[in-house]
Image (cartoon, rainbow, N blue to C red; front, side, top):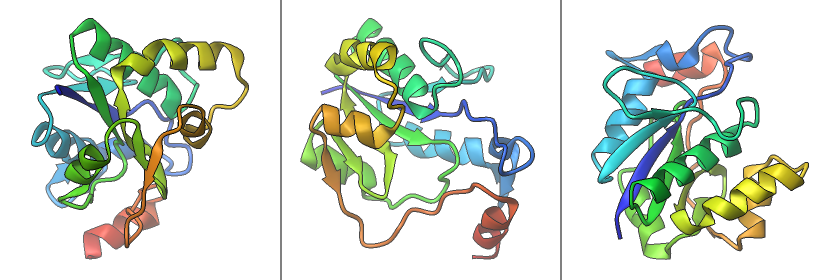
Length: 176
């Protein structure tokens, strides 16, 4: 199975107050942390929702403003077009992930997601058409709603995954 890594990076960072993916954790931006983590585990990587030179990038699909599902839809379409069997998605604002997370999701098989952070998941590329139809016809824009629809299995982790929504969240990680 070939897996495309997808970093979902189309958010507006309203709660953070500035572009949080450009903010630094240690000596790297949050975005660089996410890209490096995914690159070390998947065959290819695509950045969803923003354009960064030197990285394959796609616009959220079918339009910006749909939240993580717009980024996932773009990644699934990219996976189909480029012959990948599945997409492993993470948000750009979760720079500290368990080393075994990717392997745990692969062991469950697609579709699967992290219960406490459903943006992190392993999704079959064959779900691209179904997600497109979901976005066209359903008012529900939640990852959990989509996961229920395709009967994705949830991975329970012993600890929550740190998510950077506020400057204080980043400060806590930098102290940590």
